[in-house]
Length: 533
Image (cartoon, rainbow, N blue to C red; front, side, top):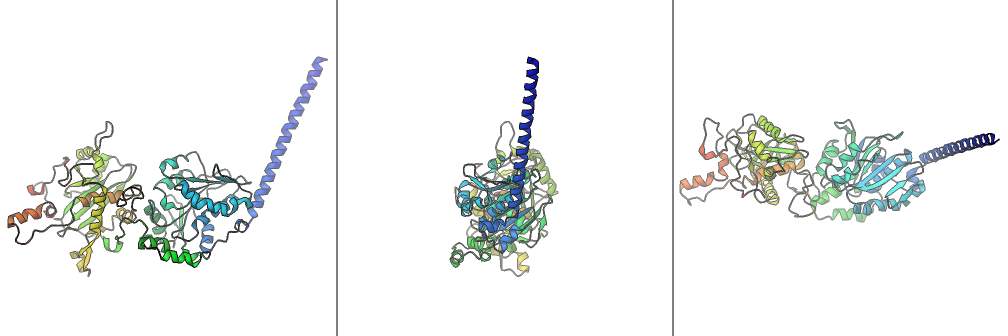
């Protein structure tokens, strides 16, 4: 009897367990069906109308873009922050289960520009979203997630290694440190379940640490938005420009304030979207049409020098400059690469020169530093036939001042006199030196520290190589007063330290002791520098 009773009890428990499992499965199925119905209802909603958002023509063009990587704005007043937030909300409704990430450089910037937009539209409560202020995220009934984060440096971006997103939104991308957006764009965007990767949407004004990269990719790369292009990875890139004049929701006072900006560079950037002029521009005197020239054959007797900025993960840059009889500098060659070891760097320098006689090679003082048991980089260079001279000369700011001097005008050189010019700059850059031409005018002033310095977080590698070169060449030739010293002394005055650059470059079989060219493999210091800082 006891055995029969136990068997009956076990059977009853088994049936009860099956019923519970069945009910749980039915409940799960009903919830899934309910969520699917809600998702379908959301999908049919006119998101913008429900939230009271009326996009103007340029915003509509931005929201309808289907390219992988789209930049919107490029000037003040185009409604950038509103558009980038609404783009995220629209995606969360259109693609159930999508994960969207919106970033700015700092939390304060999120609090000042992005969160007020969310508050204005009720944190999307009309769409069924729930706002979590602690986690700074919106969750939608269809399973979509919209997160808001700040990325002040590469370390902040690396902390997102565990996250996967299908849409990346970047508000004011030019203000981000170089490389931060790339980490997220190329490493964190992945398809999730049935949700495809939508891509990247960004906004910005001209100026900031990433100005050069943004200008090259979106502005120059698309011919100011005239074309949709594909990058080396096959991603399609588009630029949708919007200015204050495109925004009908602004009143006349806003336009008057833009017109009243006293700084002409800032006014051109903020009002007109001028990418060649921006607030905080380190070298506003740069003009491509005056400072660059097509390559020509330079006289063999002109002295030639190097400016070298070392890098491995960051770009390594070498510039070659030739100096004419009037003290002008012609930057005629460059190398700009990453992931190249120091010995190979030296070999590539010699290969590029193909036997040219190069005078002092002025290099970053850090190349003489020791790192643990490793030998100084300058020693590796010397062992491979490239002797270096420490740039020295008192730090960064004097070097930038020297660059300003060489960007200035002087009586025209012979080449430009033939073209009818009365004056031309003291610095000419061959158009083949594309990285210097790209990054020098895009270099911004430092945002903290010495206002006369450049922003070291920006792409400053080619400009650094240029200042190492120019700071050691002086400000131009010096001439003695007529009748002051005897002729012999005048000759010596012209030969040191600036006129020495005019000596004829001789080969190893015809040396000139006055040229003081270092022996192959030697390391010597600049005659003007007291030593590395």
